[in-house]
Length: 204
Image (cartoon, rainbow, N blue to C red):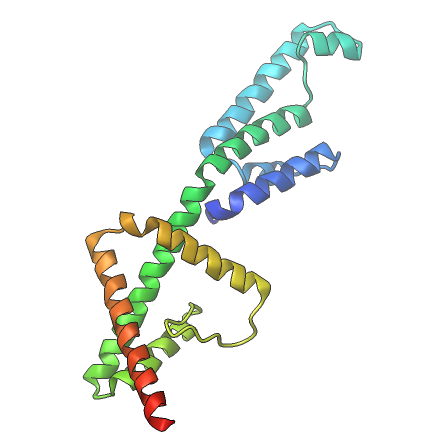
């Protein structure tokens, strides 16, 4: 089973809790899918303890069972899931940061590799820039030149804005190599923009 992306964990946990609280039947495998190994063990231990308590109890009424702390499997599952949700919310910001930083480093690597390959092949800087941006498009990543290829959705825009806000906040924590790549890309983009502006000025 693939590892659940931490950036999706909170919404998945909320969904499972909502299903259980609404009275829907949720398969054990679906509960386990949103819990880590420690949380799965926590759930199993709670169920075993509750089963033992029920065997010792002679309570028959709802009030008596509640007074003894007796809970249903559903109630125990909800409690464990809610604790997992609280934990997931604490680490969700870090999960998004890690994901966005990894994506930016990958984007930088793809762009630089394609750009310098094009330059080595004798292409001009302008052509190499286009070539490298096309490589990003083929990889399903946002382009350095800001062009949007294909249909743009509100979600695409929101994701790009989130990426930018996280990257700006986390830039100070990048490694020297990562920061050097970003700075090299920014310098190149400034040079390309300057040449474009100069070219447009001459054509007027």
